[in-house]
Length: 236
Ligand code: ATP
Image (cartoon, rainbow, N blue to C red; front, side, top):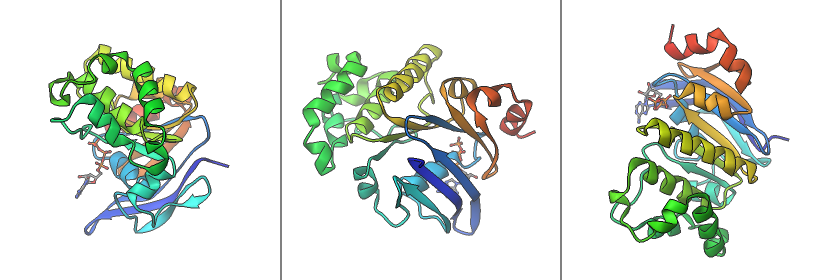
């Protein structure tokens, strides 16, 4: 059984349909990427899975339970948390305070100390900077806080929306290495990325989205070699 199952999602903003029958799955222990050009509908797909948007049609099922009528908070409590595009941190609060805010479900509140230790083991830099106000951190460090905050909710499935956005090549490599490590420590990952090569390079499987439709799917490796991936990506 898949951990996450998305079947035939139709999503619109007002009268404009942007997702047309999107289906995908994430299995236990997998890293799955959703790649595609600007405006393909990647963020819309993630926001629908995490309950921020309601689909007009289709189903989202997580560990056998339908999510489409649950609140965002309930979905997080079920074990699915998202690192939003643009991070959306509390820039006037400290690193530690931002992380603590991630542990808002009853289960997560019970393990704040342990989760904080795990986040600091993953990102020693954040332990050094735990009292620093987040707005004064570098972009790469802020992305670490955003990922750390999502991990504080103790997810089974972590969804990341463009974690490499605005980072320099070294920071991008660090973030991708970290995603691989989070996965190897037992969490499944659904990754949205425009950085095609890096995303497919770390993914077990991937889906290519074009104009709100899945046009290709396969292993990360096979999609990297497939000329059609680049064509879909460049909108050619
Ligand atoms: P990007 O990589 O640029 O973030 P994306 O693949 O994540 O792109 P989405 O953000 O899901 O794409 O956008 C899909 C389409 O929906 C785009 O045409 C976009 O203009 C439109 N869209 C997104 N958000 C809204 C909104 N709040 N209201 C109206 N249209 C929207």
